[in-house]
Image 1: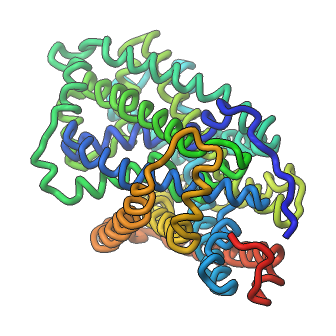
Image 2: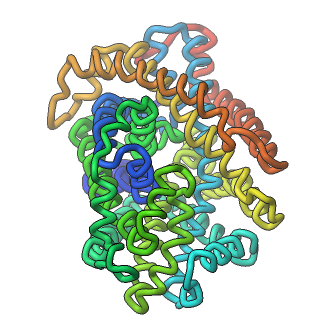
Image 3: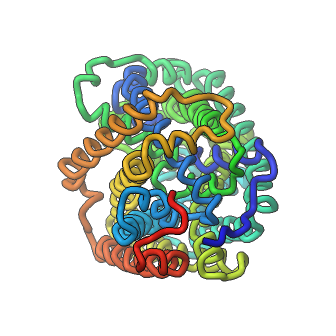
Length: 530
């Protein structure tokens, strides 16, 4: 097998910031506080951190290990990574089938998620410009803000350019390769993101009560983190805590962590780098994410709006788009700046996450189909455009739901199938590659040592059991939710697009794997194992 020369990260800080940017997204600042409000406040941190130790960190180690090992063999996406480790204990044909199926599901999650996610990024960009340009001045109450949001969603003249510009920025960054594109973008965007988050957290906790004396931001902060231990009796609290860990660390999403790890050298550290990235993400989520939106919402709407979020009557995303603009308007010039910081923070968080997924698609076309990087990036652009344009079309058609396509794709590609991808990764790394082999790869160049018992029993046994329990829970309860069922033609288009992208991914992954390893697979022998 010919190992192709691949690009490496130029600096360690660039790698850490890019990995952190990949993980830190909209979920850190919106989804996490919403889940905490709904599942016990401070008590929610108990199942949350249990899941971090038993699910999040193990899967980070697995994805980093698979990624670097695959990169040393010339691979930047999941299918060949799964193959070269699973052939250690499976026949070559069975290993190929296992890898193609796992890689195709990862491909499906990546391209479908990026389609709707880049639309949401565009929304954040538009709202950032609206805040700083004074368009929030007329949004004096939540009703007017809701009308403004719906008018935006149903107006292609505004939402399509916002989406297109964001997708264009992502593609241009990826087309410039890792060092000159992704790494430089991470070094610029991530410090800005953290600075904005710290400023907003400071404003949030010192703002006081701008609307009513009893509606102070500190009371909102206290409300969020007051533990409700009764919620720990509900199994859903533990499942949701695990789901948030999965979502926030970007585990299983299109193979993006393995892709970034594939640009590491053999002597580069894995365990400490993975833990550093995880720590940055947790700081952004728990400390900063938990200090901004809920206190601000409380300052505007009081306990009733937070109780609606906790009861599931109002999504925290919709609250951010509908309840916060009037608050920012109420604060005058400070509010315009705060609004710009809030929505541009979410834009940066979304951009740095979406870059990683587009790079996975680009890597496939570049490395296994021999297409020049700049063209591969534009092929990825077109695939994302095709899967994302229906969000805009549904809005323009003014359906009753407005986001049925988005909601259905998010449920299956953005939640359920991520668990399947992670299960493939754990089985490949721990069961098919082997405890000893994967453990040795994890510690090549390592600055710290992961205990052998943790790798063998937690990562190898408890983590896959956790994943199976989560899958069973989602299948038993989640498929009955509205998001899981098509409510209009766009919901069915979402189903059709997932089927089409699965078939396209299957063909692309099959051809790419057999192009590199076809002779080995057909003969059933390998010049080099694992």
